[in-house]
Structures are given as C-alpha cells and as structure tokens.
Length: 474
Image (cartoon, rainbow, N blue to C red; front, top):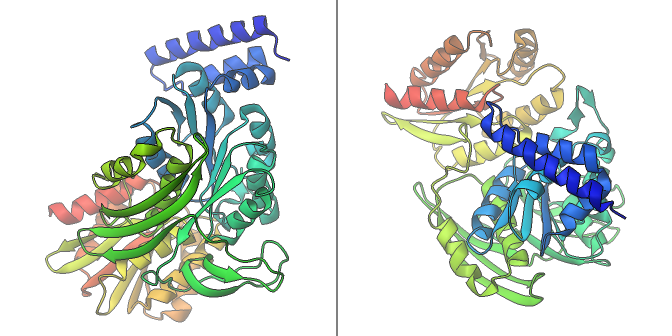
C-alpha cells in the first residue's frame, strides 16, 4: 500500500524538477520521473498510474512503434486529452508524462530489447495497462549494449509486457506469427483485436519463411506480405487468426495511395461493437506504414470513448497527412531529369526490403544499387540486406560505408563482389561526412542507369535528407 505522505512529497519534487528542466538547456524529459521514483518508490508509480480515469495503452514491437504511437496520438487527440510519450522508451519517461501532463488516457511508446533493460513484467505491474499494442517482432534489435541476446529471450520480453493483464484489450498483428501467438494466448484473459492485410495487391519480394513460434516447425505460407508477415499455418494447428480490422484493397498511384479498410471489433472503453468501412487517400508512404496505419486505427477504435466519431476522425487524420510525423531520411523516389533515384534509410533487413518494394513500383529497366553498409558485429543485418539486393536483381552494385568501419564495409563488399563481379567500392570516411554525401550525390547523378536505388545504413537520418536536397537542388 502506498505511503501517501511519501507519494505527495515525490509528486511535488517531480513537478518542481520538471518545471526547472523546462527552463534549462536540456529536455529534462525523464529526470522528473527519475526523482519521483527515487523518492516515492515503485508503489508511488502504481498510485500515479491508477489515477488515470481510463488507463494506459503501451505500444511495442521491433519496428513501427514510433510511427504507430504518433498516428494513435493524432487520432485520439481529436476526442480526449491524453498523456503521451514517444521515442523515449524507458519507465522514467512514462512516469514524467503521468506526473506533468493532463488527461484521462495515457498513450506510451515502450521499446523492449531484453528483460534486464526493458523490465517488461515490472512495467506491466506498475502501469497496469488497459491495452498493449504489438506492431511486429523480428530479429533486428536483439543486440543490447554491444551484446547479442538470444532471440527467444527477446521474444519472451515482448510477451511479458501483456502477460499479466487481467483487464483491457491486446491489439496485435495477425499477419506476424509471433505477435499473433501473443494474442491467441491472451484470449483466455482479455479481449484481443487483430489487424492485418487481406488483399492480393501486395506481394513480398524475397519472402521469409519462419518457424512456428508455438512448436518450432517450419510454417507453411499461402501468402507473403512483408518478410515473415503473411497468411500461414502449421501442422500443430497454429494458424493466422482472422483480422478484426483489415486492408481489403489498395491502389498504388505515384502521387496517392487509396486504402480500403473494413473492420468489426469491440471498443473497450464503451463495450460497444464498432464497424468500419473506410476508403483512405494517403501519400505514397511505404508499405510498412500500411501496417502502422492498421495498428493505429485498430488501437484508436478499441480505446476511444467517442465511438460515434471514429470514421470521421480517421478520415480527418489520414486524408490530410502531411508526412511531418515521419522523420527525415524516409525513403523517397525523386525524378532528376528523367532518372529515378530512390533513396532513404534502410538500416535493417525489414526497412531495406520495404524500400525495395517501394522502388519496384517504378522500375521497368536495368537498375543500379548504391548500397551503404552496416557496422562491425552487424553481420545479421548485412545478410538480410544482401537478400534484398539479390531480390532486386541489379545490373550494377556500388558499395559505400554506411557507418564508421571502412574495413568492415570492405569485407561486406568482397562478399558482394563474389556475386556481382564488377561491383565498385568507395572507402568514404565517416569523419568526412560532407565528402561522403557529395560523392553519393555524384554517383547517383552520374549513373548511366535510368533507375538507381541508394539505401542501407547511415549514421544519421539527416544524411539522406541532405543527399535528396543535393539531388533536387542542382
């Protein structure tokens, strides 16, 4: 039981620290929560979280957390006042928001890489979320503090964030076998709303078949949408659940995508059934953002108390997206005098594949791939990248260090050269970023190919924005 005197002292101290942090040069985004916890202890966090009238929703996954959280915040802010955090995946950040913001509902991004650093079971016990939203679970983020962790531990840590839930709703990706299993195992305790894709208009390149997360046997896929996401089943009886919210049709035009979405799901806040029939007009924002769109819409329809306004609010947000919520470095295709250059961050296998699928909409002639490499100890990322490079069947490959190690980049190049004998390597230094950027611009602009894709790793997302500006402004 919470000590109210200690709780009130912790609350006052945290608010004072937050007020001082606003006046300083730093963000102070987590320090108020740190002080509150240090003085009040974990029992005070429980008390603070319990004071929300509706409760808290946590968003987690390997990819798509920040975008899904941002979209959900945009949607929910039309209906009620909320407390929020994104891009700051620690408990102190959530506590700071609970302490300093106002609102009946908390929406918090929460990344977890392992049980030690992420303490997911502890977070669940303290915050007592009414919702956990899962985007996707893959093997890209299993390295923590320079140590490679077993994927089984990473997966278990994700599960633990919702494992203790006894009320609320889990929102999860039906197309991902791992997130689907989490949902299926939670159906005995809470409601589960699934989202996914149900159209022939999306097909993966270089599809990935994974093992059944329930029994370990290889899954059988009848459809691949993106990497291990698709329609699957296993001899043990495990199979993809039917989505409550699903994409049923998609039209991909150069200037606009039209997404048809339908849904039937239970709204947790009102206990009412919600029906969705949507035709959304969005910018060409990448195939991964289709999943982020479905996740945020499903979560919004699950937790908003204003069920009568759901469809109109969704249209208001998605039909007017200005893309400002996506950070610099997102993949884009630019036309420079009849040459189409696709460029942007692709710092894991999932991201690079998404970029490749986007680029493939434009390609009808030989292609050049300008590849920026991962760092040392990132061989898994390189292996995933190389699969994507092969799937695009480039006529020519250029390799440039994407991060600091030139020696490691040269090793990756030697592997690529075995398959693409005329591949070229440019040992551009990270310390001379202006030189690196200028050379990448030059390589794309002077390429003899009509279609060029430039992607991979980059130390800063802003690098890609500078390259794009350099191509367009010349």
